[in-house]
Structure formats: C-alpha cells, structure tokens
Length: 329
Image 1: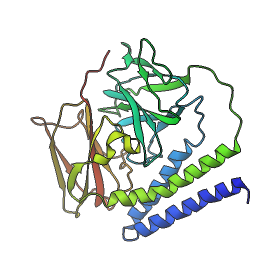
Image 2: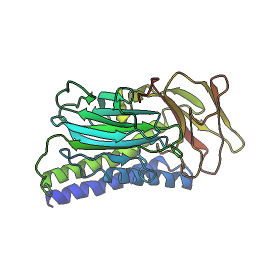
Image 3: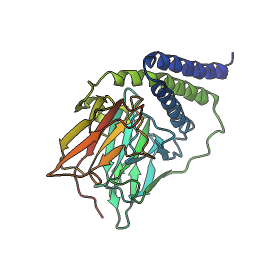
Image 4: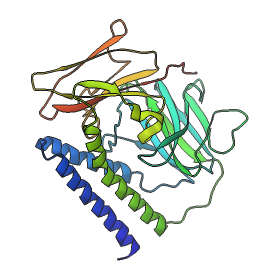
C-alpha cells in the first residue's frame, strides 16, 4: 500500500474505532441519546474538515462552531474565529466589534490535551476607534505604538471571540487577517503534509468519544462546581473566563433550580449542553441566558431546568463569566 493509502486507511480505521467506542459507551442509553452521540461525532468531523487545509503563511480566520459544526462546548452567545499561524511570521488582524460587549484575541500553542495560552489581548486594550473598528499587529517585533500580540514559537493558533448579550438581535462584527510581508504562492499540494494532516484528523476523530466518556463521569448529578481544568487555555478555552459546570438527572415530573449571585464582570451566561459537549438546539429553543437577558433580583438569578422532551433527562450545564472592564470607544 502507498503512503497515501495507509494514511487514508488510518482515517477510516479511526472512524470505525470511534464508532465502536461510542456504541459501547452508549449501549444503555435511549435510541435518541445514542443517535445524538453519532451526530456529535459527525459535527466534530465536519468542524475539523472545514479547517483541514490551512496556509499558515496566508491564514484565514475561519468562523468556528456553527450549529452544523458543533465541537467541544460551542457557545451560541459567543462568535468564534480560528486561524492557524506561524510563530516566525507577522500578521495584521483587523475587524469590527459589532454589538459585542466584550472581545478577546488569544494565541495558543500545542495540541488538544496539551494546550497553552501563550498570550491574549482583550477589547479593552485593543485600539478600537469610534466606529468600532480595530487593528492589531500579531507576531514579530513589538511596534513602538499600537496594539500588539505575541505569537508562540513554531506553529500555533489564533482565536478571536466576540461575546454577546443578545446574539440574535445584536449587530455581528467581523475580523480578517493578512500577512504583513508577502510570500510566494504555496505548492498546489505536498504529499508529506497531506499525509500528516490525515493522520492528525484521524487522531482527533478517535479521541472524541474518549473525551465524551471522560467528561460524562466527572460531575455528580444535580451539582455545580468550578471547572479548574479549563484554566490556562486547556482545550482552547479562554483564560479570561471563569468556568463552572453541573449535570442533572431529572424525572419527567421534576425540575432543577439553579440559583446564584452575579459578580462584577463584562459578560456572563448559563448554557445547556449535551453529554456530548454540544449546545442544545439554540436555533429553535431557549438554551442559554446571559447577563443581558436574564431577570435579576437584588443581583441574583434563578434558572429553572425542566425536561422538555424525551431526550432531556440527562444533560449538562455550564456557566462562564469574563473579566470586568470598560470598553473603549
């Protein structure tokens, strides 16, 4: 078999292994819950295929975690863009805040399971003009003036996040990235790089049901705790967010009451997501609340979680808050 054939066979084997593992882990669940698991696998595969071909010399900021590509705790109140970058290059990132109440740009190094947030800048330190547009120099030498973000050595990733209090009604912003210095066109294809990407995709696919199973057993039902593992950029999380999570197990005639006191922050939200780390159906149902659309009394909130259909008896919830500050402009 050729090297390309072996790489392709490795991807096919990884898909089969992921399906077998998921089938074993979900054997005791309902048919709908089992189907939801396979859907999560397909969505994750779709997500990774959208970023399969990358050009680090001329990176793209790809809109991440749409409802068809949910992957590892997507948040419908946050809009994400991701780009693969090189640490020895310099780029210019431009964009518009829209109606986002908070924004951040974070550079990461490493791979899933061993991720480090190398540097970050938030909207309070970006050079945002009166119209809401911003410009940021990324990588290379620090300029004498203007916003700048350090890149990791070697290859890394750049994530842009816009946090919204009412993502459905708000104006959506945008962002783009381009190299500061031009570079020659890349080869139309490189066999070794293509095989490497196939192998990386196979490893990601095979890892997904392992993560599902690991997270599913970490939280005691009907409790909420601080998610310490999500600090410092683990799994490409935002170091400026403080995460809490909980799980629930309810009978058809039961509800779960989640109460809490807000803290000084720019944005907070509570989100319902499945055991497979996909947000619930936010296109047709209310699955999240933010500080902008939740009703507060004396600085406290009360959220009621109740089964709405046959598939909602065992779900998860997470809350997060971003730092306080004053948006410039």
